[in-house]
Length: 267
Image (cartoon, rainbow, N blue to C red):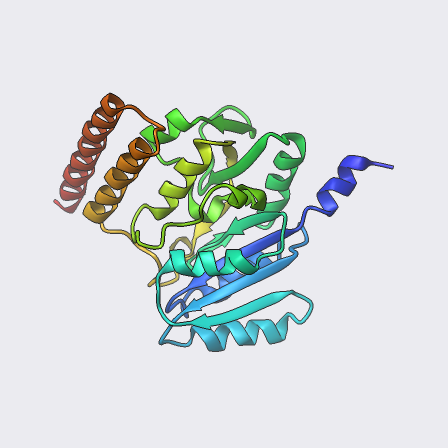
């Protein structure tokens, strides 16, 4: 009997999807989770107070896919972190996979990442790419905490984590509106090992020509969120005061470069 094969089969995956006014994209996003090559244990959709037709579309998809274990929850608007944390409280899977309502998974996304977990029991966090990687081959690359401090390598919709991590690591910070995902990845990699699959695992709904009103960021607010993350890493004794100052300077330099690039692109 193939023990490894059994391990893959019994690793239950819970998919968490926060949705806010996502009527333009929720159908393709949700269907990309339903149609995974790896069997999904459950999909938890939290409607974060949408005022458009998001709920109608979700319920229609649920009717069309009676065999999919989809849990739908409507709550007043509180932001994606509140929605994800609410879903985490009821998720029953061994692995938690995050999917934004304006992103689309490739069909074998979960299957490929579960195989990495199977072959690397010491790994607790796995990401992936939204376009083909530039590393040689299609393999898993470990990302250290120090590397993550220099650049957020984890796209939320590409990320999957062992649920047991949340026994020791608090979930998303609900007071943060920007870079809250980066905050969580930093706190996880400060204590656990993780990395990225050097393969495309998802794409943006906008790549398919769909109008998108989903989660988007303001450059300055994202920068403030990143600086806040570094301050927290210092307070948690994960970095020294000197490293904090160097990271601040490096982050601000990157922000200025992005602003300049954005202005030049408009010319």
